[in-house]
Structures are given as C-alpha cells and as structure tokens.
Length: 253
Length: 253
DNA sequence: TCATTGGCGTTACGCTTCGTAACACAACAC
DNA sequence: GTGTTGTGTTACGAAGCGTAACGCCAATGA
Image (cartoon, rainbow over all chains, first blue to last red; front, side):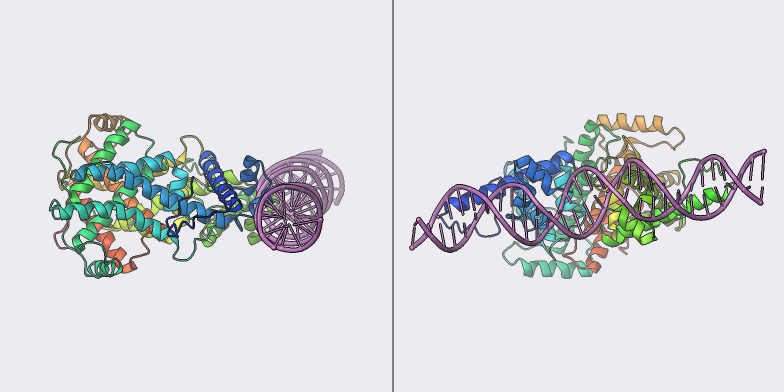
C-alpha cells in the first residue's frame, strides 16, 4: 500500500530508524489486510480479530497501532480517498489534453469502474458512514467529495482555457448559487475563474455521474445486462457532457 | 406501522384469532422499534438486545418472531420499499395529472426529501446491502429499484398519452438497449408502449435523481448551504426533465 | 371443573467480539 | 551489563448473538 500520505507534506524526514520502518510496514500490512477483508466479505464491518488472525497475530496487538476500530476506519477512508483521487487523475491524464470529451469519458469510466470493482470501498467513502462509525467532524468525508469533484472541475477549467467550453444547457442560476460560487472563488483563490453557470454545471455532472455509478455498484441495475449498462452509461455521460457545455463529438461512440 | 403487506395479496382471511392479532401487533412493534432505533442511531447495524430492551422484553424473546437478524432485516427492507413507493406515489398523485412538470418535480422532491430525512433507511434499500447481510438471491433489492423507477415511468407514460412528451435530447439508442426495451415490453405486457428513446431517457432521469439524492443524503453536499442545495436540486431536476423530453415551463421557478 | 396443549417470555448457557491490563521478550542506548 | 522503549502475548470483564431448558398463561376439550 506504500501509504503515501499526501496530507502531511511528505517532509520525508530522511533518517527513518529501523524500528520506525518496521512499524510503518506493520501499519501498512494492517491496512492492506483490513482493506482486503472488507472487499472480500463485502462489508465495512471489520473485526480486529479477523485482521489479526489473517496476519498471524492476536487482536490486542493491533491496539498498538490503532487506538480503536474508528481510528483504523478513518485511516482506511483517507487512503481510499487518495486512491480514488489518484486513479481518476491518472485516467484523466492518460488522454491527450485537447481531447476534452475523451478526458471526461475517461474520468467517468474510472469513477464507475472503480466503484463497480470495489463497491464496499466506494460505499465507505461516498455512501453511508460505517455502522457505528462517527466521521470526524467536518472531516475527510466532504474533503473526499470535493477532491473527486476537483477532477471534473479540472476538465472544465481546461476546456474553458481552450475556449472549447460552450454554455451549459441551463444558464439560469439561482441567486444563492451565485453567492455560493463567489464563496468557492474566495476559498480557492488560486483556481481559474469559474462562472456560476459553470459551477452549477459541474455539480450537475458530478451528481449525475455519481447516480449511475452508485446504482450500478450496489446492484440496482442488475436487471439489465452488463452490455446494456455499458451502452447506457456511455449515452448517460454523453448527455451529461452535452448539457454541461462540453464539446462532444457527433458520432455516438 | 400497520404492516400492510402488498406481497401476499391481502387475502384478508377475515377471522383473525385473538392470538394472531396479538402476534401481528408484536411483530409490528418490533419492526417499528427496529426502524426507529436504526434511524436514531444512524446505523443499519441493529442489535436484538437494544430492540428488546426498548420494548421491555429480553432479547431471546424476539427469536419467537424472527429467526435471526437477517430475517428481521429482510422484513424491514421490504417495508421500507413499500413505504418509499407509497410516499412517491402519493406525491405524484398530489399534483393534477395534467401538470406533468409538477408531477415530475413532486416525485423528485419526495424521493429526495425522504432520503435526506432518513438516510439510514435510504441506504438500507438503495445503498450498500447491510454489513453481513446477504440479500435473498435476486431478491427485493432489484424489485425496489424497479418499483421506484415505475413511478417515474408512470409520469412518462402519462405525458406520452397526452401527447405532451417531446423527444429526449439524446435520440441515439444503442442496439443492445433497444433489445433491452423489447425485453421489458415482454416482461410487462400490460404497460403502455415505450420507445427505446423513452426507455433510455427514463433510466437517465432516475440515475440522475438518485445521484443528487444519494450525495446529499450522505452529507457529501454539506459544504454548500441548504438553500444552495435546494436551488441546485430544482435546476438539476429541471435539467433532467428537459433532456428527457418532458414539458417544462420556461420560467425557472 | 380440571387437565392438556401450544404460544410466549424468562433465565441460563456457550461462543465470539471488543478493548484493557498485566506480563514477557527483543532491540536499542548508554 | 543494565535500563528503557516498543511490541507482542495471555488473562480478563463487558456485551452481543443465538440455543436450550424452564415457567406462565390462555384457549381447548372431556
């Protein structure tokens, strides 16, 4: 898992003592095992004893590394955020920058296929908080949401830069959403300018994408064939792109 | 809760013995209590002991009524389906039949506000299956999905009947989705005709609606104000209706 | 009227989990 | 070598699940 903590700025205090390395490795192994168990048994309800057993340890030993189940969960959630973020970013960057529709589709596909591959972890970060787990106040939950969305944002910013971004289908924006855009602008002064219409369109796209993904990942579209779901998804993403003002090639792929 | 079981055709075998009535009442009370606890503690992970304590009973007594936690969950899930279905249907019927946009918005609002009011039960039926709970094979899960969707379907059918349904924004429909439409037609021969474009548009609408609802219900839109969310939702639903070919009044409400 | 039957709820139990406490051992520092 | 720190163990108490064995009560039948 190579924990990769983007939160503490990777100060990389170079001299990592033997012990510290061992500790870090154990932490990674715990998280890896926990993640695997979670995916395997299809539940976010992980048991310390299971993890320990799987690792050839006893349960109380884990408390040396995580104070309780919630702390472990918090770590797993943070890692999952990062993983999804990285995955989506990689997908976006795997397509030439001028192929805006291609990038949009790539991001959508990455989001969707990750969720379908790992519905439990998808639910872990973007579904309901784990049973009995109280997310740290105003914690990583909304953070993750925004990070996922920022990948979409990036596409819109890029399209706008290139002058390839048309007006969205809906140009009416409610006053309160205009204010909201203003606040976002102040919160992220380094980001390119974003119009209220674009802000609204981005949110629309993201909610759309999430809807299909969530339904499919949790099996609520199983009554249509996988091929039909694929076709549906592509048309769905096309629709989202069109309504958001992104340039979309005419030929239905 | 007055259990209202639409599955067994309410044969209403009239002579309900005193005992049977008592038993039914207890079952209802258990389900009520379980539901309440679930909503209150924000978790689908309910404990028999808690339910029993709340009812002034002991845990083992509950096993007279439900063989195990899964059986109780199955019952709760079924009830929740029915409740949501009824709620949405009521919302739809609360608006004059010729006000198509009004009905669409009402359905969307009902779905959304129910989910936000009761995110746990929303997750219970439309999110990830409960930890440790294996849904009965091909069971109520997809049933619920289809039932929720049927409310949307009804609106489209009605609009089509009235000749008020325009073409959706996307009229390309992939071959495999056309076949899928055909199969649906055969599965529900009593339903009005539905074109592939319409079938696709309905699915699009539903996935959209679900996306916003799911994000909001689980707190992932908390970084914008409730008022902004309201405004966003209305514009979102408008967009969905427009792209689906439903008649939408020009004035942005 | 009185015994029987069946449903319901109880206490008692075994098993498993969580999380803490007390102890044992290895690595490291001086 | 000796003390300190980190890591893992076994031992324990509290709480949950689900089963088993028992007591109580209402309904039934002679």
